[in-house]
Amino acid sequence: MSEIGKEIRLDLMIKGTRKTFTQSHVPYSKALDYTDGEAKLFKKDSKGKEIAPASRELTEFRAEFVAGLFDDKDLTGAVLLDGIDTWDKDLIMEIIMYRVLGYERPAEEPDPKEKKDEK
Image (cartoon, rainbow, N blue to C red):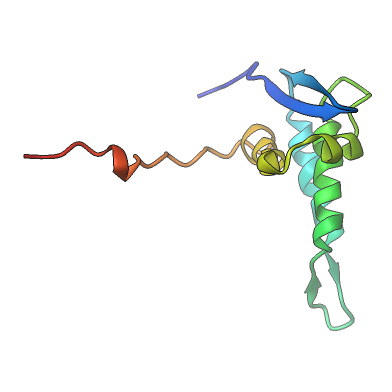
């Protein structure tokens, strides 16, 4: 199922004011750019063993990438990291995984607390 036009929305705090950034079109080439860019962050040691990038380096790359999806040039990776609330930190990866790379969201399991009593 195609979700063309599905809007990405970021609500960020910038200098004490909430600002909303939206983007409705993400070219497929961005998926290729992301996979190429992240792959370059992984290095190999002298024995050929893969070395993962530092967590901060990976997070900053991802934030810069997501910021680059938006037409608003005021949105940068640094602005995104400073403006996003810690409660919403997973939103960066959600945008990458589900909007850019096109993975399907897992089906949500029903809350067991909401289960009806069967009598």
